[in-house]
Length: 204
Figure 1 (cartoon, rainbow, N blue to C red):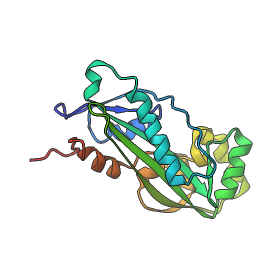
Figure 2: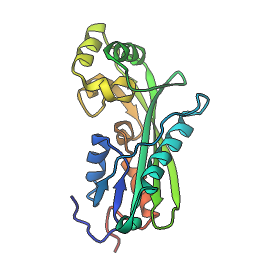
Figure 3: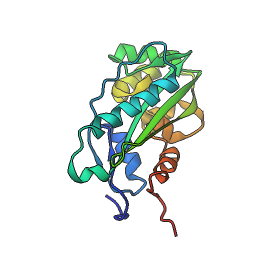
Figure 4: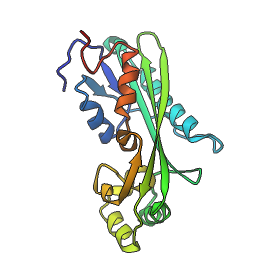
C-alpha cells in the first residue's frame, strides 16, 4: 500500500471508503481501525467546534484501544459536516429527506467543514485543525433531484451528495480545498503529519 516503509505507521480511525482512498493517494503506509465514538454534540456548538471535537473523539477511541507495536503509530481521525443557513445538514434518513435537502441546497452556496485530529500514540500528544470550503450548487429541477436520489449515492452522505461521484454534475463551483468536501483535506493532513515527523515527500 506504500512505497515509504521507513515512516511511523499511520492508523486511519474511520470506516469511510472515501477517506481510505484519499489517504492512500499520499502513498503512506497505513491501516484502518474503525472508530465507534459517540457522535452526539450539543446543538449550540459551531460547525468548527463540531468537526474538531468529533475528529478528536474518533482518534481517541482508537488510541485507547491500542496495544503493542501500534503504540508508535500516528492516529488520524476526521469528521465532515455540510452547513446551510447556520444549520448542520447530516446524512438523509431516506430518499424523501435527501430530496428535501437537495431542494434546499440547489442554486445556493453552502459551506463544508472537515475536522482533522492526529494523536501520537507514543506520547498521547494530539493536534486538531479544520478546513472550510464554500460550495455552490447549480439550480436543479425536481426531476434532476429525484433522478440523482434514485442513484442511491446520497444515502450515506452529509448534505445528500457526493462531489467525487455523480454529484459532481450538480456543482457549479467551489472555493477552497476540493478534498475537504470529499472528507479529508490532504494538504492540511500532510502539514499536520510533518509535525509528527511523517513526510509525504522525503526530506533530503
